[in-house]
Length: 125
Image (cartoon, rainbow, N blue to C red):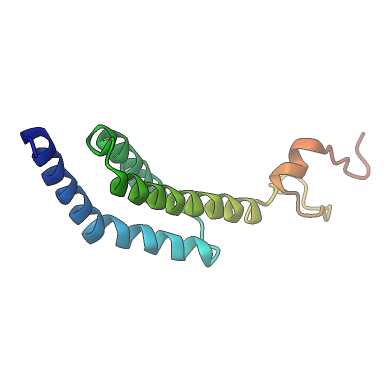
C-alpha cells in the first residue's frame, strides 16, 4: 500500500467515525420527525446541506473504493427519504390565506391545485 492509499484510508476512517457518532443519529432523528408528519426546520435543512456539502468534498477520497461508494449510496437514500417526506408534510400543511375574505368557506387548496386552478368567490367578479 502506498502513502496516498494509506492517507485515504485514514481520512475515510475519520469521516466514517464522525458520521456514525454525530451525523447518523441526527439524520435518523430528522427522519423519524418527518415520518411523524412534522415539518423540517431551517436548522435541519442547514444540517442536511452541510452533510451533502461534506459528502461532495469527500468524493475524491472515496473514488475507486467500493465500500465507501455503497455507504454513500445508503446515506444518499436516507437524505432522499427525509427530503421527500418533508415535502409531503409541507404540502399537507399548506393552507390558503383566507384572512382577506373570511366570509367564504373555500376547500383546502394544495400547492398543485393552487397552481392549476382559479377559485372564484361568490359575489365577486
